[in-house]
Length: 169
Image 1 (spheres, rainbow, N blue to C red):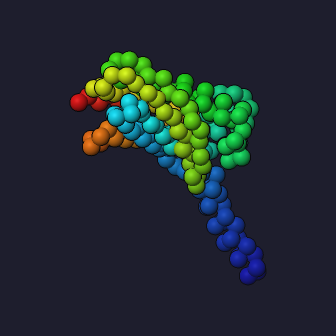
Image 2: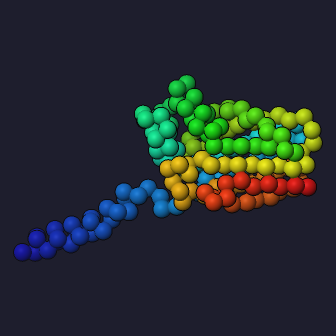
Image 3: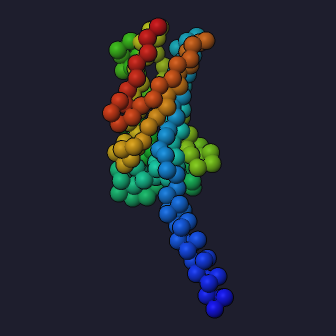
C-alpha cells in the first residue's frame, strides 16, 4: 500500500511539471542593438531572438526544418535566416532606405544573435527602424531596441501593434 502512495505522489508531481517543460519560455522578447559609427558612416545591427522561436518561424516560412544549432556554417540555413530577417527588418536614415547586409549568426545559450551592417552617405539626423521578426508565428512577440550613436543612447519597445520606432536629433 505504501508503495502505491509513493508512486501516486510522484505521478502527481510529474503531471504538475509537464506543462512547464512543454513551454520553453513563457515570454517572447527579442533585443535589437543598433550602433551608429559616424566617423565610418556605418551602422552595426545585432538582433537577439530565442533560437527555438526563430526555428519555428523558418519552419513556417520554408516548410522544412532549419537546425540553427548545427547550421552556423551551413549556407542553406544562413540563406533562409538572412531572407527571413531581411524581409522583417527595415532601416531608414533621413527618409532613405538603407540596405542591411547579413553577416551571419551565433548561438548564445538559448538565443541566436544575428548580425548585420549597413553604410550610409549623409549624416544621420533621423533614424527609423522596423522589426517584425517572429510576429508571424508569435503575436505576443516584443522587441526591445537599443540605439547608440556617439554619446547618445535611446531605447524603445516594439510589438505587433507598433513595429517601428523613429529617433531624431
